[in-house]
Image 1 (tube, helix red, strand yellow):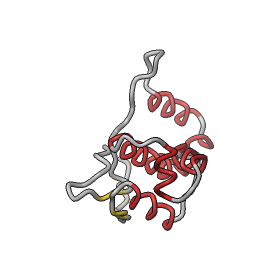
Image 2 (tube, helix red, strand yellow):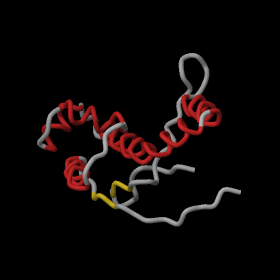
Image 3 (cartoon, helix red, strand yellow):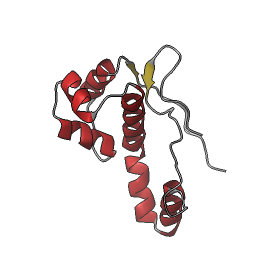
Image 4 (spheres, rainbow, N blue to C red):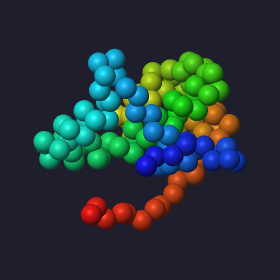
Length: 123
């Protein structure tokens, strides 16, 4: 289960994020549709797994930006980049560098924490 994006000390923690699976306007969760699509197509499942860390990073950044009531433009100004770069980062399809994540964390008044956790065997 995913957990809150920030620790009590205000650190941006990659990999332990809030579950943001809102119900879609048509009454089905996006995460359910993705899971169903992945179950039927091994290639889709592999691609989804490959992008999952970037999706989690994107969700953490969006959540923190919203908590600080910042626009993408304001965050871009604080980071020293363009609004389109922030939009790409928040899309979950972009593979940011550690340096970029450090600058974003600083702009969001956070400390970047990257952690290694054991793999959990399915079963």
